[in-house]
Structures are given as C-alpha cells and as structure tokens.
Image (cartoon, rainbow, N blue to C red; front, side, top):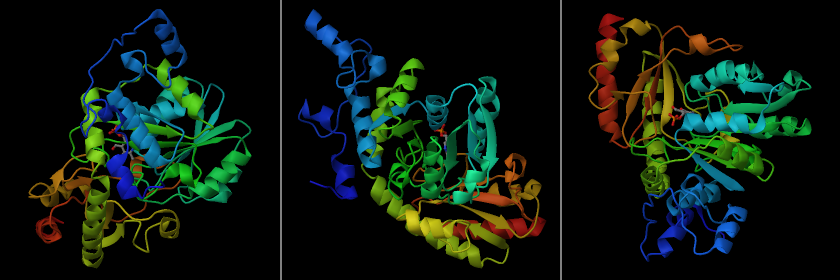
Amino acid sequence: MAKKIETLLATMGRDGAKLNRVVNTPVYHASTVMFDSYADMRDGVKNLDDKPFYGRMGTPTTRDLEDAVCELEGGAVTRLFPSGMAAVTVSLLSVLKAGDHLLMSDSVYEPSKIIAKSLLKRFGVETTYFDPLAGADIAAQFKDNTKAVFLETPGSLTFEVQDIPAISKVAHERGAYVIADCTWGASYFMKGLELGADLSVQAGTKYYVGHSDVMMGCITANERTAAKLKRCRMDLGQTVAPDDAYLTLRGMRTLGIRLEQHQKNALTVANWLEKHPMVDRVLYPPLENCPGHDIFMRDFTGASGLLSFVLKNGAYADLGALADDMELFKMGFSWGGFESLICPSDPTGFRHITPWQANGPLIRLHIGLEHTDDLIEDLDRGFSRYKKVS
Ligand SMILES: Cc1ncc(COP(=O)(O)O)c(C=O)c1O
C-alpha cells in the first residue's frame, strides 16, 4: 500500500519491535553478535547487509532508524553518523578522491566549508564555490575533474533556495555526483533524492530528534551511490549509540505535526517581522522576496521554523541589548528543537564569491512551538531595548 507521509511516520522502522510484540524497537546495547553454528557465522559475513554480524555494523535499533529514514527519503540505503557534521564529511569522502575538483555552494554551513579548506585540501581535492542561486549556468564552473557538487538548500543562515534539479542535470551529464544537505526541509517538506541529488544529508540533531537532546547524522544514497556510501562508512568505522538511535526514531514519530506547527508559528513571526520598522528584510523561503522563493514554491511542500532577519542599521557589538534579556528566545547555535532560539551571526567572513551585503546585523531565529503571541511580545521587548542603544 502506498502510504501517505503521516502513516509512514507512524509505521516506518518498527521491524525490531515485532520480535517482542511491543510498539517501539527496544534499545539494543551490543558489540558482539553470536552465531548458532559455523555455517551461520560464514553466512553472516556474506550477508552483512541483511544481518549485521558485529555491533559496529548495526543493531536492530540502529537498523530500524536507518530503514525508517531510507523509506522517508525514498533512497536505496541510509547510514547513521554520530553528528550531522560527520555525515557531511562522509558524504564528501564517499565520492571524492585525490585529484578531484569539488563545487560547493557559497551559502553552506560554515563548518562544511572548513572541511573543504582543511581535510579535503590535505587529501588533494580542490574546491571552488558557486553562487547559491545558480541553475543550469553552473555548467560554466565545471572542470574536467569535477566529481561532486555540494549544496545546502536553503542555506541555513541566509536562506537562498537552490535549484537541485537544474544542478543535478548538469552534474549528471558530466558524470559528477550531487550531495545535498536537506536538513531544513527534514525529508518532510522536501526530499533531495527525488529532486535529483545522489546523496541526501540530514543533521538528524535538528528536526528528526526535535527535542534538543541528541546528536545524529544520516546519509541516504540512491542506487548510484549506495555501494560507495556503505564502503566509506564501514572503512571509517562510523557508528551511533543505540540510545541515540532510539530517541531519534521516537522523535520522528511526531516530525510531521511538529513541522506543521513550526511552519505556522514561523510564518506568523516572519509576517510580523516584515512589518517592523527596524527590520530591513526577512530571509524565509515562503516570503516572496527571499532569494530562490520561486524554486521553494516549486520544490518544497512547506517551510520549517528557521529564518533570519536583517536589521536596518546598528552593530553586532550592540546586539546584547536585544538578545541578553530574552525570556523565550534563548541564545544557542542549534535549531530544530521544540524551543525558540536566537543567534546573531555575521555571514561576511565566510562568503567567497557572493559577498554578503547588509547595512545592519543579521539575526537568525528558530521559531519553536510556544504561542506566537508570547514569542512576538518577547521580540518586541528586545527591539525596544535595542532601540535605546543603537
Ligand atoms: C545545515 C546544517 N548541516 C549540518 C549541521 C551539522 O550538524 P551537527 O550539529 O549535528 O553536527 C548543521 C548544524 O547546525 C546544520 O545547520
């Protein structure tokens, strides 16, 4: 039966539960897996994909989470990593080798750029950056040795929505792979593989977990990249703790209803911010003036709760007046949990080919599940405090 996404979220990844007639797959703490016979043991090594034979390859708990993510993403295989960053790194290492060239979007999460500048450079991979709003014109930046394009859509600080279908078409015609960090859409509002990417990366830490208490990373591969992903993950010995896998899968059961509410709340706050006299612009893909809005309308079914706004003027040094005394918007670098967060952040230093232009500071907000009346009141008070110093 072709399941609707709400049904899928409730039913996916429950094979391990069947063993014990409970609803949720239990937490299996295991390193050693025991065999009944020598024949079984030899079989185990041969059929690794069906039946993990050692804890590092997986347990019923981690395999159920992998199966759930894979079904949600519509991929060939999913593997788990101890953080979103580990997933980003392994996605790159899976398809690149010394002498290759990587194209990376200029709007990606800064630590993803640092991998390119440090680790990949050290291992002989050259990186150049492309305009996050590039479509088919990205072709001009391909070299003979371009083997991968890494993008993040939308950029999680400046929110440019990227044209995965156009970029993938160009990349595939040239034999290159497309890696998409799709954390913002959380495989609920957008699925990177369906749009043409070969590897879809999720910082599960954010919306999958949803409760700000677990680090988790996932990569889902299509048929073209499945073997490469499995090999690289195995070689690097990447594995996750069963308690973390359990909590992530538990969080995913409510992914849909949480995201629908994050979207509702974020739209209310974004519309309020747009009208505020101290705000120059709001960067949130459902808003018409957000870069890549038309692509968002074509490729996404909705928007999550992360957005940024730019103040008309002022200085980052004064933002303590706004942020320090917030009651609900606590300061933190993460997002995707049930709670609202505020994070002033200056993109200037890490843009390579598309310089960041703004007269005032940028502030990123994660809009949580609190009532929007309270969130808006909290922000309004912050703006009043800031007005006195700016
Ligand atoms: C878009 C994006 N990708 C990847 C990551 C890395 O995830 P993690 O913090 O789980 O390592 C983050 C973290 O903030 C992120 O925002």
